[in-house]
Image (tube, rainbow over all chains, first blue to last red; front, side, top):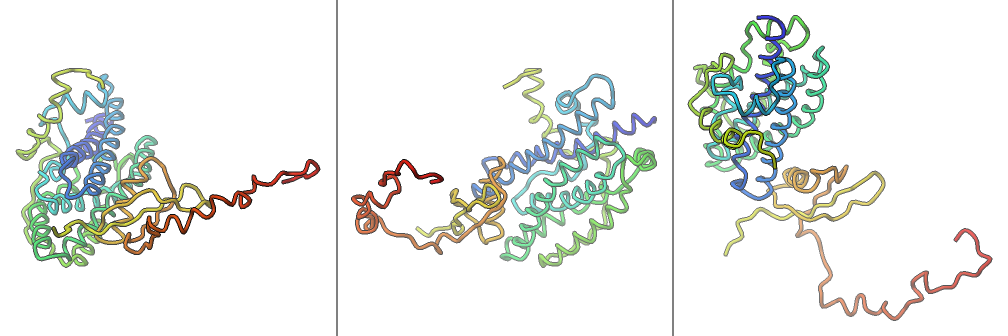
Length: 252
Length: 95
């Protein structure tokens, strides 16, 4: 693998994670528990899709085969996607969505804090812009963690069960392979061990404050770096890509 | 029927430094912190402001419509309370 291929892979990982979690959140549109929360969820979804647009556009340039962000988003199949498994997990109930957002937003918050220092100017610029948005996303998810966790018996149980179900997808967020090794050396990407330490600390603090328990399961599910996904991604892509594939280049 | 909605908060947004916060509408929220977040999402998505205040709606005391006559109409026949009532002499500068 050469450095250009490594950068392309890395940008896909970042961009795909944002695109897929953004699409998942957009499924809440019109289904939010109240109007204000519906708007909040969709604002956040839009931030993710905007971030994905920048990253996938840059990925396409880096690849140099003439694919733009739309081609990458709409014309790749499941096994070509590099999003983290946690981002494709179904919304479940509101508590479960908030658990997923909290675990992922915390990761993204610390990852993008590091990416701001990337030696690649485009990555650094995208990270600076996105970090402001992520700061709000994390705040939003954290406030809900505290209120649902330390709320009623039912909200507590639902949130705990959401955390328990998603826990096995968190460890792959910090896995590093050849791509990471090459790009860390280049100053393009950060060492994820640093992100992991910060993530674990913050997640433990919030879970404790929300009167919840750190899940005890030690099973780890991984595969996204090789394009091996859970059964949910295919259905998501079918819905997300349908219009573009049916009407290529459609505009409105 | 019991009202199952969260309490209502009135939202005030300051557009620029130094100018007053202006009432822009209201949001439902379980508490003040969430009211600020909801207000941010509903009212400041397009760079409308730099500061948000939220106030529980039930903390606002308002004049009632019946008071309209007694409160406001007496000023209708007192045009001399407006600066435009007065003619400015020709010689006056800086007014």
